[in-house]
Length: 121
Ligand SMILES: [Zn+2]
Figure 1: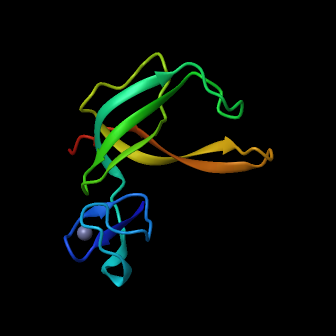
Figure 2 (figure 1 turned 90 degrees about the vertical axis):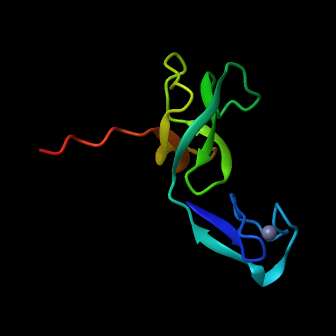
C-alpha cells in the first residue's frame, strides 16, 4: 500500500493526496510517497445490507483498520457477512478479483483476517 509522509510533522496518511498534510496542513515537497506495510488491527466493522449501486451487491462488510504504520483506513473486508471477524483481530491488505462496471476483471484492495504464522519446528 502507498501512503504519504509529511516531513514537517512526521504524520503518515492514506490514501496519498497533494492537498496538504492532514495534521499540519503543510503542502509541496514536504509531502512524500511512502510504503505502508498493509497490516493492522480491526477497530470496527459493519455489515451493509442495502446499497445504492447494483455493482456492489449487498450484503458486504466494511471495516475500520488501524494500520501498523499509523493511519486509520475504512475499507471493504474480505469476510462473509455472517462471520464477522472480532474487534482487535490482526488484518492484512489483500487484492480480491472483482468484476468492473464494464464487465472486465479488476482487483479491489480489501482487508482480510491475517493468518496465524505456521508453527516452527
Ligand atoms: Zn504534517
